[in-house]
Image (cartoon, rainbow, N blue to C red; front, side, top):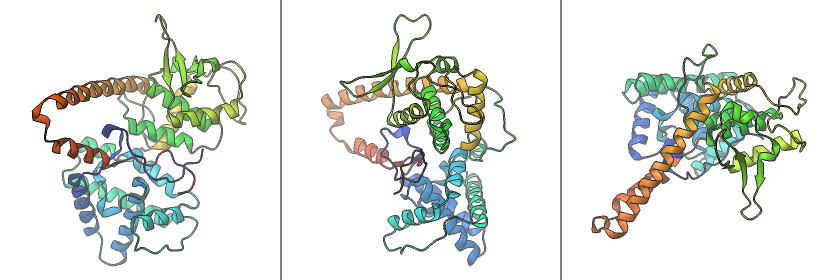
Length: 360
């Protein structure tokens, strides 16, 4: 369950991506980038800040962008927290150097140390804060967006009220879990992912049993059989690839003994085949939220937000289906320039490298 750097995947839809790389957004990011560099003295201070921003943008974009071509106004606190976590890992400098060389084929690979120094990490942190401040100064971020762009502080320990959680935050929570090499990592990643994608509340998650997992030999898909109290039929929730990996890792640690699917883990690392409590689920969310830089939330916010996201996705699909049917019969749609432009915009998007594969 290592969380290394990876190349960005192609998004399945424009809403699922974390960063929009349209020319307009890149132009805004470049203005903020240039304004940020202008606040530093020429020479080493400006050069070192340029290098710091290049490293950060390479990590976030998976090597697609360097600092001057990155939409800094789209960065949020959970992106910043995970990025700063990634760059402090052993071996990060050489992997990031490889990303920078891949972006610029004229760049020669430089021999780097095994870790970034504390001074280098602090420079990256301050450079990121400065460029985000310039985004606000230029009017690219309002006060609320600027607040969301700040990494979470430890003082923010409790949610003030229920809130909607976006998919990027869920990916950050899952990534923070995946970076945990203990058995808690895959368990937490699967619980958080299922809560959002399946709309499962805390009580639903803790009541799942191992025999609620079903493998379809015909399709090769794994689903979770879940029945809402009072409903006539159970519904099946398909697992995504990342959830399947987490399930495999969790079952390798938990074993195949019948009983609760998600179990508490003692401080010594022993897994007890019994149901988790709501308090343990809240502790899990608080811990992963702090690690991922996600603003505080209640566990059931995941389920509520996931259902809202799924409803919005279904509405978009119905709208796209109607548009496609009109395009086939109406002469107004003979010119496909708008559709082609939309496809280009969808292609020009990247995911933050949350779920990473070993190596490059």
